[in-house]
Each structure stands twice: as C-alpha cells, then as structure tokens.
Length: 479
Image (cartoon, rainbow, N blue to C red; front, side, top):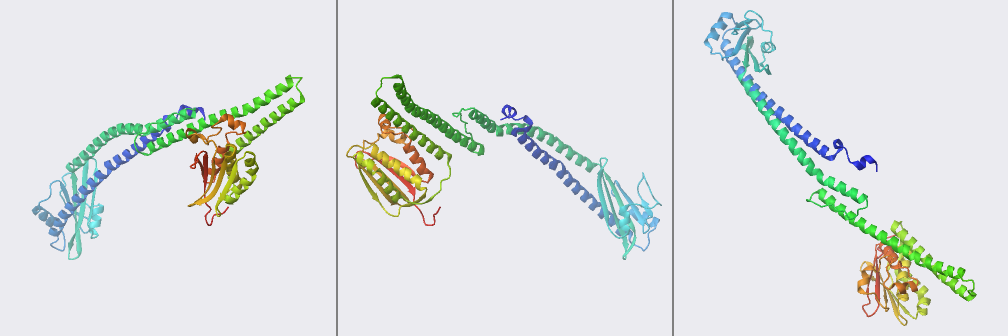
C-alpha cells in the first residue's frame, strides 16, 4: 500500500465532500426551480390577464366604430369622445391602409402617420394580435383587433398599456424568493455539513478499524450503531475479524504444535546418534538397537510430514475428482486390510454392511476416512476388546459407524479430539505412533464431500463411537 493511501484520502476526494456536493447540487437545483417557475407562472398569468383585458377593450371600440363602410378622422374622434377609455392606456385607430386616424398619446402622438407595428399589421389582415413583456421595471402590453363591417376590414384598433404597479408586485415576489433562497442556502449548508459528517462517521470508523486489523490487531471490533447498511457492514466486519482471529490463533497453535511434534523425533534421533558416536566401546547389538530406534523415529517423522501435506492439500481446497462410491465395499476393504492388526492386538473386528449405500465422492478420500476411524478403534482398544463397523442408510444419508470397547474418551475432551495435534493420552498416543492429526484429516476430508464426523461414548457401555455421515447418491448424480 502506498504512503499516500496510508495518510488518508484528500478532503476534496473524500466521501464526506462528495455527499456534501451532492446535497448542495440538489438544493441548488431546487432553488433554481423555485426562483424561476413561480416567477414565470406569475408573469404568464399577468400577461394573459392584461392581453385579454386589452383585447376586450379593443373589440368594444372596434364594434362601436364599425357603423359605416368608411372610417374618417372626424367620425373616429367623435366616437372616441363618447367612450370611456381606460386610464393609462394608449389608443390608436387606423384605416385599412394603416394610416393613423386617432391617437390619444400626449407624448408621442402619431396622428397622420402610419402605424408600423406588427400587431396592427396582423389586425389589418383580419386576425387578433397581442403581446406582453416585462422590461425596464414595467409591464408593456399591446393588443390589436380588426374593425370589421360586413366581412370587410375597415381598419384596426391598437391598445398599448404601460403598467408599473403589477411590475412592482412581480419584483417583490422575486425579491422575497431571493431572500427565502438565501435563508435556505445558509440552513442547507449547515445541514449538509452535519449530515455528511453523520453519514460518513461510520465509514471513517470502519476504515480505521480495517487499518487496525491490517496491522495485526485481530481483536479490534467496530461498534455497530443503527439498522442501516453501514450497521450491517460493521456486523459483517466484526464477524470477519472473529474468523480472522480464530484462524490466526489456529495457525499459531498449528505452527507451534507442528514444531513441537517435529522437534521430538529429531531430538531423539540426535540423542541416539550422539550416543553411538561418542561411545567408542558400544557393542554391535546396542548399535543395532539404537539404529532401529532411529528408524522408528524417522518413520514417525515421515508420518507427520505426510499428514501435514495432507492437511495442506485439504486447506488449499483443491478440487477432488468424484465418482459413485459404495461405502460398504470400502469399509469391507479396510476391514480386510486391518484384520491382521486386529488379530495382533487381540481385538475382535466385526462388520455389518448394508447394500446400496453409495455416495458421490473420491474413493481414496473415503478409504482414508474409514481407515483412520477403524485403525484408531483398534489401536486404542484393550486386549480382548471389540470393534463394530456398521454401514447403513438413514434417510438421504449413508452412515459409517465405528464403535469400540476401549478406554473411551473423557467427556471434557470430546469437543477437541478433532483439533490438530490434540491427544487425549499424549504418552500412549506417541507410544502407538500417533501424530494427533488423523481425526482432523478424516473430518476435514468428510466435510469436503458434504459429510461430517461426530464422536461420543459407546451407548452399549465402555468405549467410543465415531459416526461418519455423507449425502447418499441420488438418481442422476454423476462425476
């Protein structure tokens, strides 16, 4: 890991900054919408209302003027004098050519000129036209309608309104929205900082815990708070560190036990060889005896090495080829091989093997499981004792049961007999050539094939019963 990562993530790349920026972008988007949509809707409503009002006024004026086939300046002025015009509204009346016949403006009177406005041109073509805009602090509204007489366009009425009061209302709305937006921005900024810190607190705590575990502190735990995904992640982390701590303790214990087990035969070999080399007067019979002891210790080293290699292969989880295996046939083969050993130890070996007890596994692995269980039952039995081997089917399982009439295993030792290098009677185990690895190898092998091994006292009396259980071969299973 690089030094930069060990020092921590830069602030501008941190999750807290990303959370804060995300929230700020959301708030900014909301404020933009809040400052545009209401204003646009208000403007649209005001513009629509004003244009409708001016059109109605223009239509009233136009219908009043459409009393003859022609429009004259004098006639228009007389008619307009009789109408009540809206205060602040400019009124223009043109003939069919666009010539201004009437203009009530006192600032820019265009009487006698031509009305060069788009709305007037549209009205002279027979269409109503209107337009509104907000500019220079005022709402400017224009509307024009044609003056019709029996389907003919005599002219146009054009109205123009300059309104500052409604513009002030729009400005106040906009000012209020800006003030509210500033307040929201300040509040949102404070909340964003607090929320981002709250949301990232568990992440920072978890990151710190990971660094502690990386340094070898496997007992470090994270306090789980809440019920969200981060709390679940903390729980998963704690379970992971539990597993790591257990694995590390097992590894250290395994290395310690393996070193001790290897050191004992090596020390014996060294002692025996020194005895031969340093004693020049030793006779040949004693030398042969010492060499035989050295051979036994070498055999013991070989067995330990083979068992360690077997455990290494099991721990590596290498894929094992599987095929249909008849458990009874394997048990019968092992029993036949161990019969001389049982006879030498004066132990009676009995088998009860039911047919059709097949499973999908590696035959060599199942053979090793059966051999370990049956060999232990013979080796740790008593003279004149008995070993019963039974293979049967139980539901969707096939079961190998090995029961002996030996000294048995104390109840307090039963939970640990499958631990590596664990022995109930260390002196007797070494004397019989045991390494303390056989049961561990047997159980790990069984579990690889979906089974398991359990141990308990002999229900019929003194001794121990081991039971290896495997999933039975189902129709359609195959290698």
